[in-house]
Length: 162
Image (cartoon, rainbow, N blue to C red; front, side, top):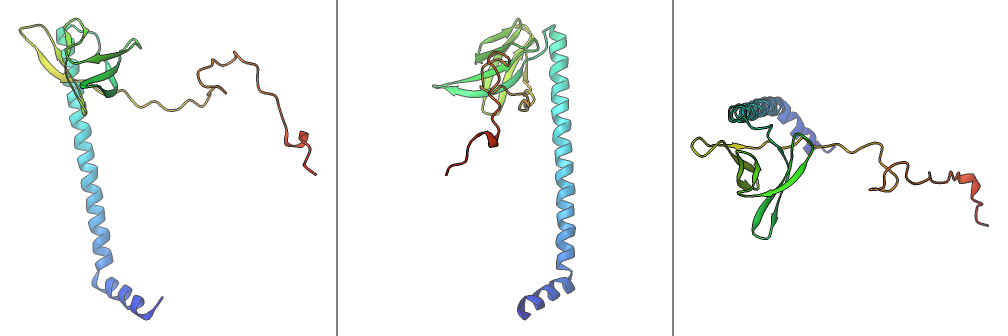
């Protein structure tokens, strides 16, 4: 380390620049944690409101969003229903009795819940992200056990080139 760099480090430490930066970083992390907690609280309130509206309307559990994509000029959404069905829907499609897709945007899917006189708009939640299976088949798409196991080849069974 050169004398110039050493002097710079001593000057920063003496003025408290490093400790102030660390304190500011701690404050930023605390502020970020508070914001994330507020966002999570808002999401939970939104889910609770959607569940209350759904229950009041007598509708089955709301589907969850798997994906949103654009087909030509029409936005489409792929939804996962509580019974495991997957459906691709567009705007103004009916998902269930009294449940119609009102709008599909890049940020989410809004559905109109209820009958003609009393309609409420609620946003569908996203499905949780699935993790990769650790028991993948050797050939994707082929059920396990359909094909015989691959031959057991050890490195010593192959003669070395001469």
